[in-house]
Length: 172
Image (cartoon, rainbow, N blue to C red; front, side, top):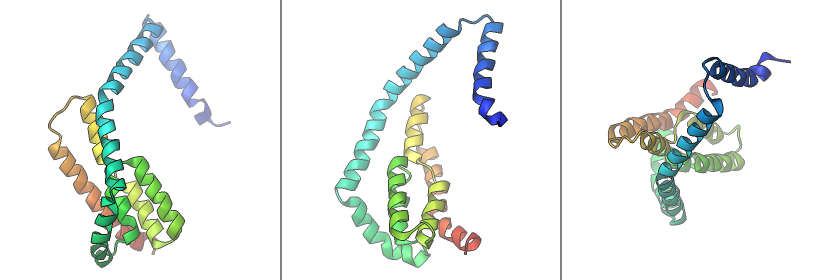
């Protein structure tokens, strides 16, 4: 048996041992932390609901398909498979939605296709920017997130544009 299978129980025992050694009421500390987590989750709920509603409206209205159709010729000129465009548009907003789009690309084009490989690289090298900023900045009660969003979206754009190049250079 590997040591990694004992790692989580050892960490738990270490935390409990440390609490006992410091004479901390472990149960009260756990309950206090759980109550704080619930308050945080309730504070983040409106932001997450707004994000999910916006994503649903964007996809259901047909705006996502129209935007992809309009940008497809540009994608072909820069070497980005048009199949990957919905993933590039959805990934900064929704991780689960992007995972569904990735599944559709892999099912339709195949995992070993150029589009499947580019989509996989894109999925691994981009972030759910708006979700992450909403959750972490909301939890820290930071109001001015404009510069962070711009920098993160610039990173996402770089990853989207460089994914086809990385696939060509590394995989061929």
